[in-house]
Amino acid sequence: MVSRADRGPLADWFWTIDRFFLAAFVLLMGIGFMLSFAASPAVAQRIGLPEFHFVERHALFMIPSIIVMVGLSFLTPRQVRRTAIILLVVSLSLMVLALFFGVEVKGARRWIGVGALSIQPSEFMKPAFVVVCAWLFAEHARQPEIPGNLFAIILFGIVAALLVAQPDLGQTILTSVVWGGMFFMAGMPWLWIVVLGGAGAGGLVTAYYMLPHVTARFDKFLTGEGDRFQVETAHEAIVRGGWFGQGPGEGIVKRILPDSHTDFVFSVAAEEFGVIFCMALVLIFAFIVLRGLNHAFKERNDFTRFAVAGLVLQIGMQSMINIGVNLELMPAKGMTLPLISYGGSSQIAICVTAGFILALTRHRPEKRAQERSLFRVASGVPAE
Image (cartoon, rainbow, N blue to C red; front, side, top):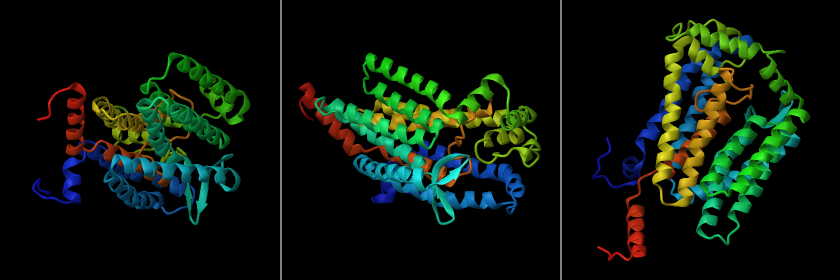
């Protein structure tokens, strides 16, 4: 154990980090690794790969993911902001390159090939985008003459345009909801709420009529007709699992589920471990969101408040979309379950998000003392 009397970077980190947050993120990573044993061997065998191919790669991706999460948690809020700006510039540049030179999968260009690996830049864009927008909103709140809100709107337009061009409707919706939530926290006028809400609805209608894959997915969801093999198989797996599941390794339906290790790992968890296990998994995500919002509510610094709220909202919304698809409550969107689904870019990017959250929610006594001193001066109370 690290003693409170110790004075050093590691001891300081250990006693100032939010250990409940850290435990929740590590627990999710452990559950994801466990579920990779249940969900991925059948997929690997079906496509002619060694049985534990995806399990080994999942474990391999966990190493840099943990390093990234812990490393970023040492940063100060200013360093978080600077890191996010650099990451956003790089990821947006790679998203542009992906449109012209990226790997095409199922008609979408979202990946950049780097040797034997494929990187999805939009995954890394999301946490950086949240932090940069939080800074812009905070700067406008601190100095209204700075057009931070306008810059945030322009940045959102650029990001949304790149996501639609890929095309990736799921990520576009996720990013829009998170950005809208942060803008609302920043004091968005009701006129903007109406305008942006109308623009969002108009965008969905346009996507339905202009993008064939979006039309197909919504029609399948609304009418129940067409190729619904994957969602119906996922539903069958959940029903078969019941309250307590069939037991580890005893799942049968998962063997014919094409994306059981990625988009539909939640259904595999339900079949083998039951609905109660899945409810516990949902509670972990709910805990992260609620604890983050509680931190944001207590935080006096606008940048930290907006950033923490946006980051936990991003994790919560992504998990809700994935689970909603598994439960046939939403059209299929091809979105991973954070820290649970297989996927190197997704896992490392979520750990970037987790690292930012841990860094921004660290307890910093010197910061609290400075805030109390400024509050006394503003209130006309004599210093102690």
